[in-house]
Image (cartoon, rainbow, N blue to C red):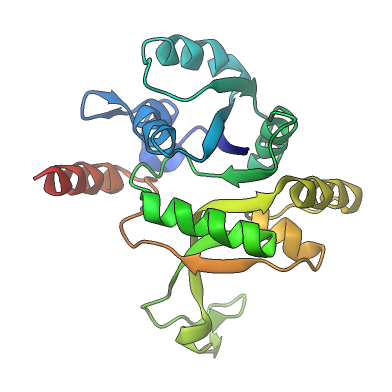
Amino acid sequence: MISVIFPAAGCGKRTGLPFNKIFADFLGQPLFIHTLKRFSSFGQIGELIIAAAPKEVKLIESILEKHDNLLSYKVVAGGKTRQDSVYNGLIATSEKAQLVLVHDMARPFVSKDVIKRVIEGTRQNGAAIAAITATDTIKQTDENNFVLNTPPRASLKAVQTPQGFQKTLLLKAYAIAERDSFQGTDDASLLEHCHLPVQTVEGDPFNIKITSPADLLFAKALFEQKNN
């Protein structure tokens, strides 16, 4: 069985909205409903776990009750950090879950092909994450913004979600992170901290994360174009 965890306890300050961006109206529905529908239509997935801000748990549950075309779901209270929220979601997954995906709730355009590649990579290697090769030249700078070097672009990846893990490996990585007081920037970095291998699989340039008002406008235009 595969469980999908959605950390959704952020406040969305970068969007400029006075509320959590997952509630932003996106073509007549809250943004997060579009994301959940993407995974609900994927046959290999068994449950959805939403890790919400404690004060928003009831609100999310009330919205979800209006949608009967979703997979079985649970809404749990998230934590102070994204890492805490994912862990709260992880321990709430079914005992039958062998694989776990973690996906940003603000990525409503994830394709079935990307989800499939992440699942296949996870089954083969224990952990796999969606990523795309960097197209811009990247510069590493010092604390004064002077360039130190230019890493080879072909070796640089822009990481997306979903990120997939064998559940036992992710639980192990979280336990070690807790022991070491380690805070990662994503879930894969927790496995890297444990020196566990993580494979990258092909992502999708359209699998965007909505973080700003401009992203919302672009996302609506992209949705309309895809539908036409």
